[in-house]
Image (cartoon, rainbow, N blue to C red; front, side, top):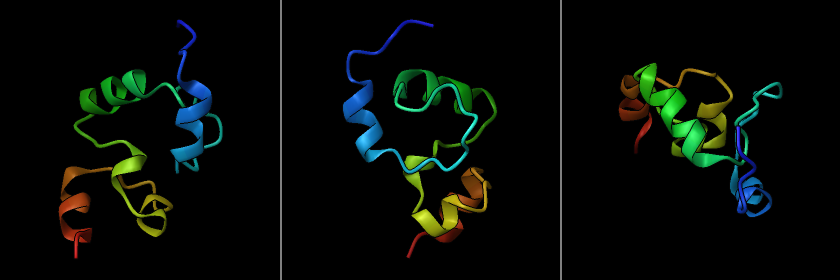
Length: 65
């Protein structure tokens, strides 16, 4: 894993609450990881929905106003 030049800035916006995540602040790695699992990253969800850890596309669609 390479260090991301934008990691510090990305972490200011990252709402992921999964503490052991090694991809926090490294958005490109986060997107690749979740895409492989047919999921979306935490930043696509509101904080209350993100806290459920259900990152499915279906949950994203149903959580939209």
